[in-house]
Length: 102
Image (cartoon, rainbow, N blue to C red):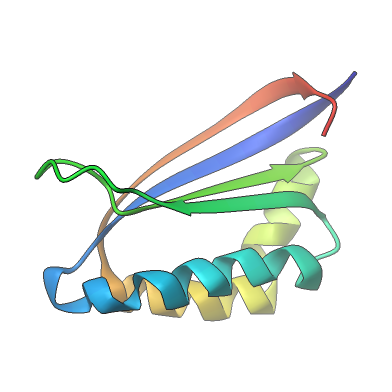
């Protein structure tokens, strides 16, 4: 087993932009092939209908803090962040070390 960092982001979409969920999910998923420091990306849409539920989740696995920093500043990630800032009203983020066989 190797130790990895897991970066988790939950996003609450603007009501007016809920139709952009799939596009945003696809843009986030595509980062896996574009950013060398990313080991793996998983995205999913929430089906819970609670008012406090987040709409979209992103999980990114990287090998260390330097890789996480490289991911954060990568131009392709920055382009997706522009979409997130346009369509998302609230995020929650957790970064943690995880022993995994990713």
